[in-house]
Image 1 (tube, rainbow, N blue to C red):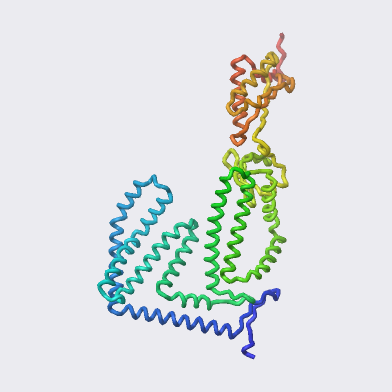
Image 2: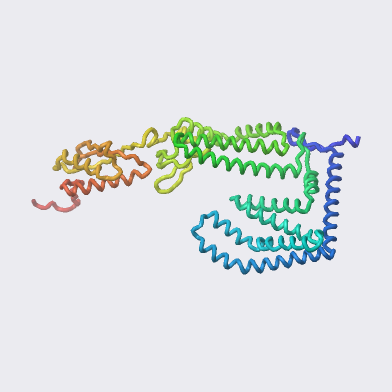
Length: 460
């Protein structure tokens, strides 16, 4: 039977077929055709209406007001720029808003000119003779408000997308053809099993999810600020709480957004199966890093601000991410170390349980110098350096008798390894040099006698 004939598109595996029956396809096509004809009739009627005398007069008035707004904006813009330059100490957000006003100055002038004109014409003549001007005024005001509000979006592409979509929707609402536009977009649909996916549903999903994700991002930022201000929570637990809050908020936004647009969430079982297959084929490292990040936050082995050494990398932890840890070195480089390496590798945490760090330096003096005096002078020199702790006093010991010197080790403590280790060692060495020079302590160096072969030995 023709009514039972269907068009079936099957995948390579023969599963997940998308079925659209012929009568349904014909009904959808006829509906779209009728809606398109209705819109065409309205457009034709609108264009024919423009030929009426009063509609032509209103268009001429709008064009004249636009020319006047252009001239006024050209006169005001130089003075406005001079006034902006005198406000350079204002906050950045306020300067950006003033720059936006400067860029939209012609539209602002047009709005301020056309609304009084509409109100005046409604008082002096019939409302129908100012209807078109009212539509133009509402469109200009809607476009201006949307242009200003979308500046709150930092992403350039997303800002342009929201702006143009807002302008299009505002135009449809003001012209009163939203019903026809929604019906036309809803008629463009495909049937995927039990799910009917239309263009209107896709638009709803995009903007509903976008709004919910924006709200989730704002709430997560506010939550993160509140958690970071709470000094009773350790840094690692702060990061863990923030990450869980972000995952929960974004997951809730996705769930609510899909339900609001009418998507059957039981179909997500297919997606979860695809994710499982993807894990088996190449996402093991990603999942391993995510799990390692959670373990690091739970066991508190490292936290933001700790000074660590991993291989040849020495620096302090800047941030703990879901996939990697940011380590900043003294030379300004920022290493992004996968969390798995911090779990499986050997990591030296210089400030795990406390901030005290002991440093050792080696030096030697001549055999003719009193070792008791050398030890006392070395301790005095170390205590004279700013970052060396006095409550954990430095110590100096003899570690051996070398070929040309008595060898010593000087040990001292600091509490700020993020301030650098090489520089504090250099300052202590410099203090040793100064105090040895003042007290006549000599630092020996090897002296060797070299004889050239082939030369006759000189008589003594």
